[in-house]
Amino acid sequence: VHRQERGSGAPDSHAGWVEQALERARAALRRVPELKDAALELVSVSENVVVAAGEPGRPHAALRVTRPGYRTLRALRSEIAWLSALEAAGVEAPRPLVLDDGTSGVVASSDGVVVVLSWIDGMTLEPSLDPSTMEQLGALAARLQVHARTWSAPRNFERWHWDATTMAGARAHWGDWQAAVRSVGDRAVIAHAVAEAAARLAASRATPLLVHSDLRAANVVRRPDGGLVPI
Image 1 (cartoon, rainbow, N blue to C red):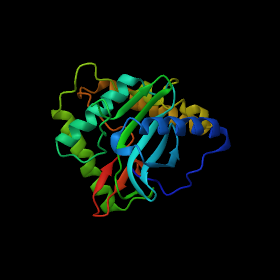
Image 2: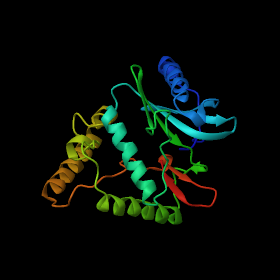
Image 3: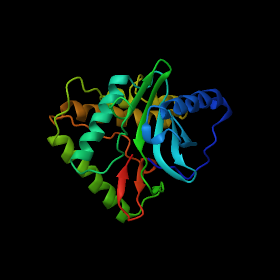
Image 4: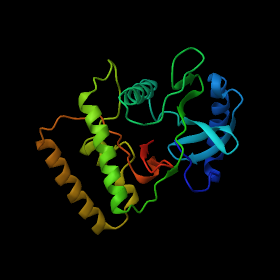
């Protein structure tokens, strides 16, 4: 995971949550042998708090402190299983780090869960993508899809299911889109598009696949050698 080029400070309304997240990240460091003496730096605040760990200016790991109730422990462990499988298949992605008990990637406690991954050197993509970058991004998505078609997920694997309801319904995973649209005309246009998409998905016979589900510019790192890595 890599730092985004934007201010790392948090809005005042998030100050309490961010401080709690930093304390949880500090506690998680003690569970990762190679990070016990690492310094922390706040990277970003969104649905999670992301913290870099390592020497000042030379991050070694990314600690993702999950917001309470956002993801289940099973879902986070499933994500770690997927990342480990991608690494084994030669698809570059953040690597789950080994903990002091021999497990990887997830530090769970009564205070919550922290995901611990390797740091990916480079910079996140700019929101405006040129055609060459779009081609690279398409190739990256294709590699992930090929892996998803051939990998057998372990029992009890859990990940959000995406369909018209969970993407754009009243109880969508990321909230009700209507709360962000004030114009009656715009709502009508979007509602028509949602209904059309729902009808097409219902009629589709395609087999559901495991997907990244948020492969936007801010979640893709361009390495110094020019390659793209999903985070």
